[in-house]
Length: 328
Ligand code: PMP
Image 1 (cartoon, helix red, strand yellow):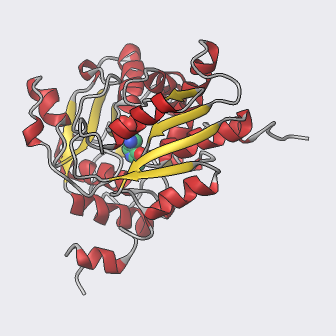
Image 2 (tube, helix red, strand yellow):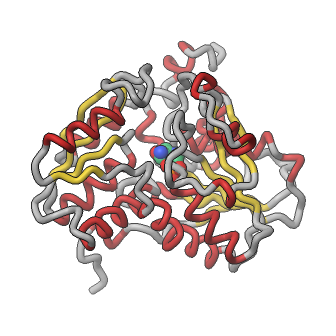
């Protein structure tokens, strides 16, 4: 008999799938999508959630029967919830009102408590989801505050699992790695692994307008007044999390909320790959950068999460029309 001992054993070993149509007939390079929706929680975050829990168990930050507290937009919460169920922990997740209602409902279905905070406040405001998650962790006994932003087990998970898989799948032939950037875990963990193997591999982060990541990468300066609210989910930041090592990133490409949404829809219709908003942004970034690629390039684009979490938004025609992004 061949079976997994539990759901956690099914994390990883996701497929690499060639993109054939969504980039247009004349796209110069071979583009392979690392489709992370094949993880049991339907996102890449299962990998780092498990790694963060295992590391916290090892050094005693997380104890038997404890409560896991995190500020999460959903995917990390899903990964943490899966591991918590198998390992016997309770979860409280703090999120913001910009996130899809579906994402919160899914977390509740997995047995977690979900607290929703306003999105239009700065990170240091006591109502922000950063602040609320911190204060909850101080008042809840036997709890552990995960902090995926500054918890370096996040990037280490990608260094140990995501990147080596891609390296093996491409037989070390990749020339570019394109990925949405939020906490910085995926881009830094993978970027570091690839640069150690071959420093010529180009590491390209996908950012949104309204985020400070690209400006910080290019100038080393943080201008909080340059940050503004955007609609894209999962990527962009108004802080620079500890997980970043900007030295392994070659370039940030900014994508509009509209293009991210439109390309996610195209990816579904033209490739049958049903992914989330940041996946659309990554595809849009590739199209914007088309002129920089050539026929010998092997580009890997990582698609973070599943489209089912966005059915009320980018996959809803009425919502798209309300944004003015869809013609009648
Ligand atoms: N896309 C989605 C949908 C996400 O949930 C996240 C995590 N915030 C990212 C992209 C960015 O990944 P990372 O946090 O590893 O930079």
